[in-house]
Amino acid sequence: MTIGDSILAQLKEEISEIEYKRYIKQLSFCTEDSKTDYALFLAPNPLIASWVRTKYSEKISHLFEVKTSIKPQVVIELKNKRSAKVQTKETPANSPQHSAHQSLLNPAYTFDNYVVGTSNQFAYSAAQSVCEKPGGAYNPLYLYGGVGLGKTHLMQAVGNRFQAQGKSVIYSSVEQFVNDFTRHLRNQTMDRFKDKYRNCDILMIDDVQFLSGKELTQEEFFHTFEVLRSANKQIILTSDKHPKKIAGIEERLLSRFQWGLVTDIQPPELETKIAIINKKCEINRVNITKDVIEYIATIIDNNAREIEGILSKLHAYAKLMNQEITLEFTKNVLKEHIKEQRENITIDDIVKFVSKELNVKPSEIRSKNRSKNIVYSRRVSIYLARSLTQNTMPQLAQYFGMKDHTTISHTMKKISELLKSDENFKLKIDELNNKISAGQTT
Ligand code: ADP
Ligand code: MG
Image 1 (cartoon, protein in one colour):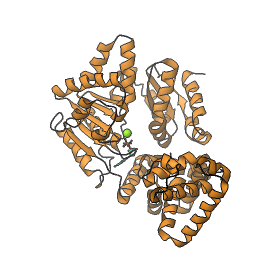
Image 2 (tube, helix red, strand yellow; image 1 turned 120 degrees about the vertical axis):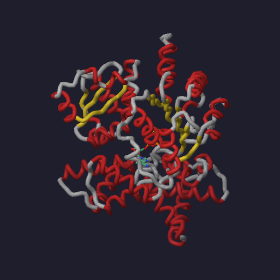
Image 3 (spheres, protein in one colour; image 1 turned 45 degrees about the vertical axis):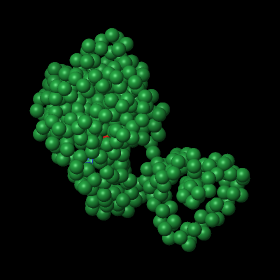
Image 4 (tube, protein in one colour; image 1 turned 30 degrees about the vertical axis):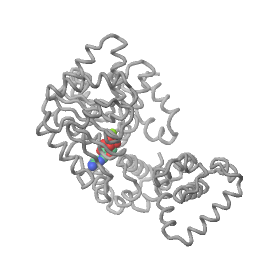
């Protein structure tokens, strides 16, 4: 068994069997072209490749690191593209390991592939300005917003643009930065670390909120930042929060994060979601009709990351069943998806989800607090937990800290009445139900 195969076998233990069969099992490890710091896997089609890239490449890289203590760059290529390359006898000198920093960018993350709507317009223009005037007024450019809203995509669009101009670009997650730092520190090769991070034209660090609590790394990052900024080199940062809301990062860094331009990306409106799905279909060469696209747009939340998974699933099923992707078919396939999600869903997932949606704390939902908002959230949680999980009433009573199952059955009765009498309540429950069904608790 090659190291690549054993890594995939290990990944199998960590994901659902369906996901494993659908995506990971389809990969083959390319022993000849992989090196200790570069792992190449081949995928049979663009959808699987892109899905594995976004969802699993970081995980795979991590598993390698655990096994070999070297975190390789994980590259997923298309099988037929690879064989074509072999035929044209591409020399290893052109292989990505010689430009390790550069090829870490996802080539599909370009400005052309980015859909602009009111939710991200400002961030988009800022990113374009950075391309025109790197190291100018927008240094650093700090993009923040929720998961899957396109921060990484936009940041890498700038990176791809710079790279095309032959500039040296470094893109790194905080995890990667920390790993690099600790490895070089341990091996007493800090000069190489500095050489890498301080001699680039543009440094992009993704999800800086993860620097929280990592004091040594913050210190190092502070110096990197100072060197680059005083040399007018461009820095781009992303985060899930405004710098003012991040805890556990030293003040001098947080204030520097705000020296350039801080801008957020808002959740996309329905039209933008539709446009993004259209774009993804175009890129992945999936042909689906307008009604299907609209349906998908309504069942996904704000996280555009789900789109590729859904398209990949539809594509795979359609091929398997030799069927057109009609609306009916889509609903059916996604219903399967819903069932899978539901089988795995726990009360914890539901409570976490409800607390996020209704803006209360999970601990409040489980408490005895009687304030209106919390009672409401508790009822909704109990109802959803009862209808979507296999837990019995005594189990629910125990979880929600109630005396016994009669309290739960009383709550269930109360909710049934509300569902009949209160239209808004019913709508809310339906909405939450749909979202959970579409897998948004994960
Ligand atoms: P984030 O970094 O904010 O969590 P990503 O940049 O990883 O989000 O985006 C998640 C997925 O959604 C990617 O596949 C990305 O291409 C896609 N996406 C998000 N926003 C857009 C957009 N405005 N246009 C096109 N694709 C988008
Ligand atoms: Mg991101």
